[in-house]
Image 1 (cartoon, one colour):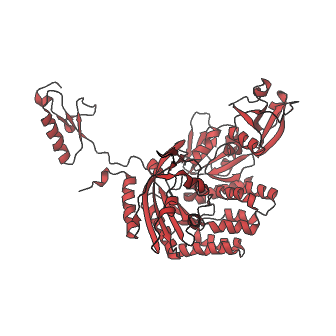
Image 2: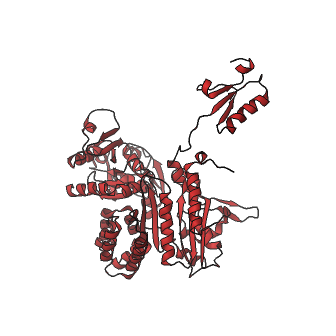
Image 3: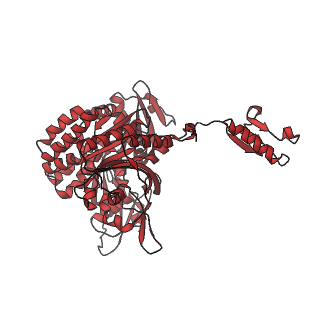
Length: 205
Length: 366
């Protein structure tokens, strides 16, 4: 039995469709209900639907053997797990954005609003820039508009939210996409099953 | 003295049976102080897994630390007059624990062998690590084996520059071939052999064959492969797996490396390897060292509720009952091997079968 943690939402739906196609079906998952655990003994899988930011924790601590999670989340914390595959969907960019016409003053402490605190700290440390972090959990774009911050660090998919708020990307930090992760101990004991699944996915994407 | 094994936690029983095992191979128990001067660690930071150490000032003003690691202290102080010094210990180490979200006192049992390390010594220590895993009585267990020379030789022969080594090792440890390929393109080296290396299956016989192909004659790698072969040929266990993602990120290890896993625990329960570098650092060049540590905290966290939960016999009394009657009633229960719980308020689950009611028999209230 393979325990798979999927992120609730669009990414999770997409991953399930892929796995369903590859024979890891669990029709119950598509029903409109409030269940969190879905099991199919025939295809020998058990799915958990969890908050996207929690997928890596479930896998790291062995509650799930494998999972799918955005690289943005993996980069934010130091997880001890295997990153087996780039699924090449859920693509976006981690970027620094500011209001259009923003002029950087290198002599000042840069005020950065973000929910990716560690990613932002790591990037600005690498370019030796002193910053002040303003940790927010949503509507990050609001911060520069209200002059709460100079810039934001966030994931940008199409850039339409930025455009609508008169903002634009001033620097891309890294590319983000969905990754297949595995618990290190589970990988020992379910190596054949996990490798088989990864290979099947590899052929499909 | 008679010891009732059922009153011991599984981890306590394990610790006792491992002591017997280690003594059988002529390892001697070694105890030590929990403190060390901080300057000792400041000089040897590269050998520590984390730079976070609990420090405090001693009465004479010296900055002291609570030990974050035992092997370092053994390497410093062990009396190495014999050909081979064989020790084991059960001690606490103080480290930042991810699970605790801060500093934690971690229970460790470990085994160290210092001196003239021969191929046999390596086999013996790896075999003891495997036997220790077996004693944990898990449904499944596996001992991952690798060698520091594999990654070192490979990166050297591929031509990975010193600046890139740390990052590449990180990708190897994560089995992350996709980001490695992107990184290699930017850094200007060919990742193909490293990708093959990462993707090797755990099966020893096939893995070793494939490793020789990847080595392409690199001497550091071939020496390492031969050493792994010596060990796996001698022990011949299906539970030993080749694991190329096993890479040490400290300067600690220089030879064979191994990690033990059991199926109920998500992190390794045994970590170990060859650490001659450490001894060179301690001014003991020419002396070899090999050992491993067993993480009892991980074991205890996941091996809960193993104490046989025998039900107590309640001895119910109040102020009207003479104390000596209460005492002898409790004594009668315990001398018969039972568990006595003396109460003045009757618990909900008390009934005639499990209660000695001294109040009613005294004619008092019930």
